[in-house]
Image (cartoon, rainbow over all chains, first blue to last red; front, side):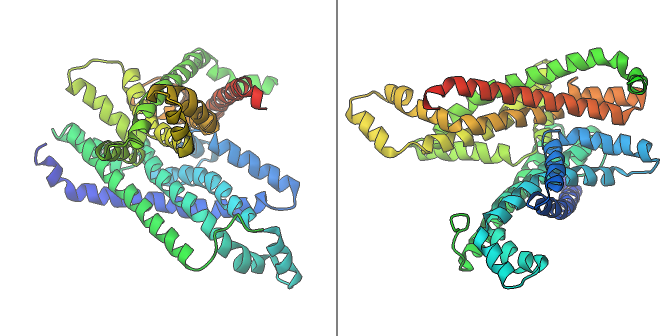
Length: 224
Length: 222
């Protein structure tokens, strides 16, 4: 390894910031979409449940990469609009994230016992109140661990944005490799940066999980 | 129907390539699955080894590979092999990269299966005078196989989906086909639906095979 890696340290760290920003944005949009989908999936209306099932099954069983290609090359032609590589990557990742998260959030919602719903309804709570004060605080414990897992997956998946030329961490590594003689070392450093980032996320997720448990609620799912 | 045929006409010349692309995806995925299972079994025994250093090494292997993107690993292997003086096709690079990546996930599935076997069973088998090999062969592995069968099936379909990244190092599989055919015909919506259809069919085929084999293997227990 020569000094190239050190010269480009700042560039690499900035690129890591771009990766975090892209995956974070996709996570936020995906969580919002996943929440709406989860409400649809647990609703009384069959049509809503079927639509949700089709959406989630499609995006879970199709590679994000081809969705990304479609968003970047296909959408502009289809709707005659301009889409930047950043927008295309965000849309594709968020679509995938919402499908993964809807399953996670739906599992959290259904883990709260039926009796709690009935008790809240009997107390005269509206559906938003019931969700806000009774269901979601309890569902959060069940949702958090897989939610962190989805975020780590998104960070890794965001690397495919490099394939449509968006300059995030992976693409930065490839560009530096091409323009210098850093060779393999730079790809190794990129891998190491991803590892550090994702490992920190999983450690932080674990800490958060323990704090939620300490908050005094017994583990869920077992409770009726 | 006629409208559909007219819509799809520009794509006809590319359907032959799609056929071979689908084969590449399938062969690449199956090859990666077999190699990852072999690697994963070795590392899983490392994860539950009595030696602390072996356990640490195996844990590091899993944590590192699970936390870096497959794409970065593929590029690394793709650039590494020539640097070592090895000339292989991109397909081999993709196979090695995917096998390494998936072996980390297989390890975790296998480890969960191994630790689900109660300690009492080991002790009972040892007190019967079984050798370590007999113990693994007759007591532990049959139970592990049963526990991990379902999660393994889920992982198999994930391998097929993950294989789409191989197009980045110029392997002509289905996502690569989509990019080429799309760029040539400008029918990105159509080729997207076709590629998506192929992935769904391949995943469902593997799912079906997994279910049928599972029924045959575990029929006695219903």
